[in-house]
Length: 235
Image (cartoon, rainbow, N blue to C red; front, side, top):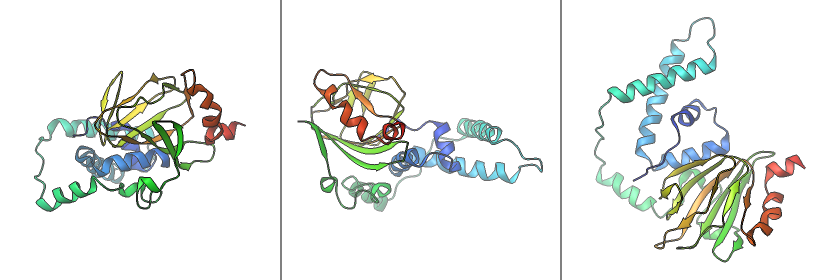
């Protein structure tokens, strides 16, 4: 079961098509396997269409529309029941098979399997594969860490989105499993640890490069900065 989701505000921006493409990729990948967010997205799309149908002759500010939409969504959540339609045997089988495949939204970058990507090893247990660099902006990448290993201790210099694709990891704030969507702000520090039962593969979007804080791993910081589009744009 997925426990961590995009915020309602982020889902609203996603439904409106105003979310940056790199962030929308993470949201789209999460939604593929999260029935709760699929339902929220359907509500947002329905409410959004009603709101824009009712727009008066004098244009209303976009922020006002967004706040109105969020208000209606929260009201809808309070009055709706929590019943969920039963999944058919066919849909359960499809979900089972998809556990072993690359998410549909990532297949433009990962054609067949994660093993075929060009991975850069940053430590004996930690490696990274860059999927996309937005010019002057965010970087989309996959991280892959061996079972039971510690990811290098690091701090953030910008916002980060992490989506767990395979396995699980934990940090000071909790444990995150397949499908969980985690948002971290600038200056957040943590030292993630992968569970011992399986390796962990995550999709990440970094608005700015991370900085390793360990005695040895900090030697990799110039390499990380050199390959991040935000740093190259500043240079």
